[in-house]
Length: 303
Image (cartoon, rainbow, N blue to C red; front, side):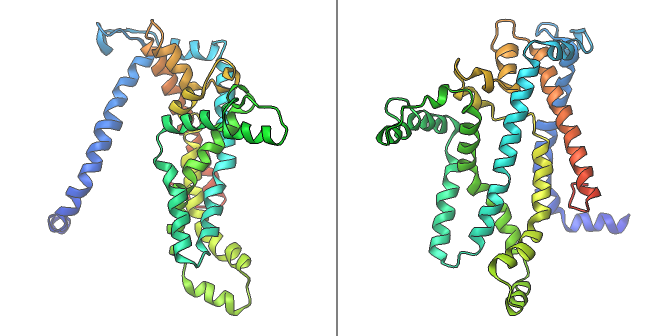
């Protein structure tokens, strides 16, 4: 015990350094969990959390039995699955390709160009989409017209909503996401590549047998974390891209909560909290499930 205390005293700077993020997590992540109680109550501001009437699972039942439940769950899952299938491997493949670029200035230029869109705000991004895809003056429809095609109402077509959302997101985030994979690739032992070159391995073979296995653990960890947010969609972007024409495929859980729970005159805080807690529980179960699958397949896991 004395030795442990001396060690803590000798390295007190490290404990001070880690205390700041720990305080942030406790104050902004754990303390607000107390407010989840309103999901089980008919919360009114005048009565407060403790004095409000306890109603149990009333709001959860209301959400599950609502007319829009099936539609918004389907839209949310399909949008996330599309985003996961299309967006998850893209930064990985981009990092593998960029890792073999030997012209230093070209590599840095590509990194900067692909990294920059990450800093574009959601509002500006959606504004750019509206301008590019505008039916009358948008660049895309102007090019289609030049080739003899009729203009397409991209933002008003419900079948195109998911593709526009996902691929614009990939363009915006691919450069930033590949940084993690590039960091993992930089830790690969150069002697492995040297030995492979001596044995006559091609660049493709080295990529497949050396680079890819080295970043698979990182990719699995990121996949597990992404699975936890399967019911979470970029609320602001979806809301800004919505219009009466594409509502059939664009209404997701987050926008539904905003409109029904918070934007309505009733201000259904308890109903909104119940839906939020429902999402959190589903996400937690998905993380546990995927983590167990990763462990059973001898891949990296969170625990």
